Image (cartoon, rainbow, N blue to C red; front, side, top):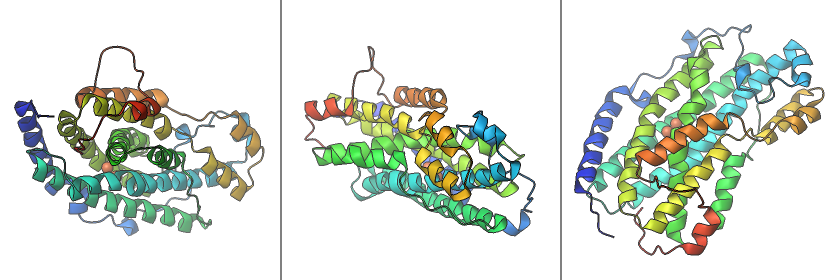
Length: 323
Ligand SMILES: [Fe+2]
Ligand SMILES: [Fe+2]
């Protein structure tokens, strides 16, 4: 397919260049690292926001002793960061690597590689920040670390990839889930980044990460805009459907991780909480963000949303792998 919109391609180039200049001065990776020793640990402060817990209004949670709830909030910080680490390593990094190793056919090829390599450096730092901040809290609270690997977002991504019939689908899937995640992670980080009443280190780490992710959301949007121009209509439909489906999994409450935590702390009536809590939390916030992403990158279409991964698999025509 010929690229028809030269003006748009030039517009993307101009924005990516600006974002790259900003990265050099603003990205956390280009600043002094956070000095944990300057952030006093306050044992009376919570390590996580209660308002983010999907079971915050459940009677079994409300009735539990404060000390136990406080321990769960420390583990909520652990779950939150472990999920962040999996998003960085298993979702975003592979998509950055795809574009760096085999960039799309585009006049912006070098720029696309450039901004993706910057994002890759950022994500490596975010992974390190999350790991250090988790271990800091486990250490200060004197509690054993949480080991958990079965995040639903990651499992779902693996399942979608395993049902792909061609490499172009796998590549588009990796990019779609990363692109949606890079938009949604800002919403994911927002509450903690803005809550200065929680443990100082938790607030600072999340705020630093959120500032980088504001830029990533733009970077991925412009990269997606460039990529979309080179896609066939079925490839666009496929990209759109996977981006929309990512919302459900991003907003997932990850109750498997909570089941592990409740068992570690012997939480009373944990089974009731797990049974009564739904799979998704704050889904509307995430849906609004991703719909705006779809508009921004040129994937909006009139009419009803009907595309699903399964139907896209059947209809695919894409020999022309462009991303
Ligand atoms: Fe990140
Ligand atoms: Fe990111």
